Image 1 (spheres, helix red, strand yellow):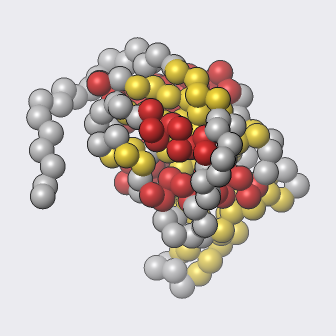
Image 2 (image 1 turned 180 degrees about the vertical axis):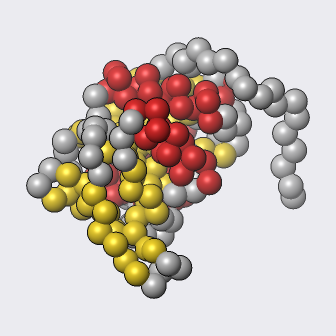
Length: 189
């Protein structure tokens, strides 16, 4: 089983819940790879390797410094084609859930969103997710490959850093026609 984990970044640093998704991937077993998209992300890629990703795919480009669904989706699809992962995981952040849902739609596969627990049952992902404001917990599986899931922040232990390092593979940004033009980005203080 091969798993690809989206390591989300914000201003060149990893979003902490991404390490939880990586930890869950390691817990599931098999080959674990990560993808880091952004600008000036070499340290995040190195950390992903130290936390257990055997291969870390990076798309390091100034045009990827700010999350752009179309661009990130094109990059992820290209890396999935190259990697051949059976499972794609992301943290259930605003960007992670948008990216995972768009990927599922484009590939025509299901998604298990907002998982509290995730495990392999007979080689298929099975997630536990809340319904009706958490009053009901449902066991959910999906058809298709890759199997896609998002994990609720703090629902899994983060992958611990170690001494190993992953193989970093630089990937060129996928060509994409943007639907919107970002003119200015301001961060609140």
